[in-house]
Length: 225
View 1 (tube, rainbow, N blue to C red):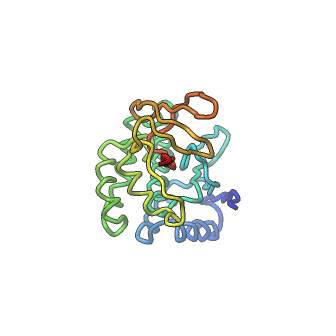
View 2: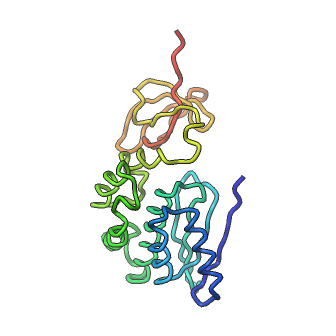
View 3: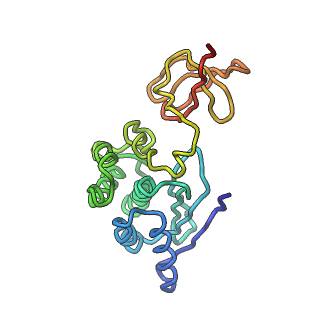
């Protein structure tokens, strides 16, 4: 069971703060990225939280008007490569806030420019394996609000999730044929039609229709012979 770990890390504190965040990065990031991740934090310090797994997001940047330091949270269960991308994604939000305030769009041109600049030193084979590096470089030409919106990239990233080999065999909803049944989050659905990044599905038991991300991992229901 994962408990939310909260680390209130301020630049003005003792060296124990740096040691704490360094230990987190040593555990969570590719080894070649640890020093760079530390440099980003030291340059513009923020509160840092490790959160339990959240289905709706991998991380976030939280602004509070009355806070001396803003907050970044990242899901505790991410593999090292996804953790690094998410970390730099959120640091880019923090830097965009410091440079431009709150008047810009969350994933507008200012954020994209900063994200691209921060990611550039990491786009090499000493940090990412080649199967991730190729789609990641493509993704960074025009980064989206979430890496999960890039089907090619997320498909490669998920290969490195922990205990992947012990899970039931799954496919992406985008790869399932129309009219087929599948199980998702303990419920059974039928795939009806595709709509850009989402798929219209009907819950078999209730007949209700839902839009589900095409990147969702689902368990196909095999037809009985």
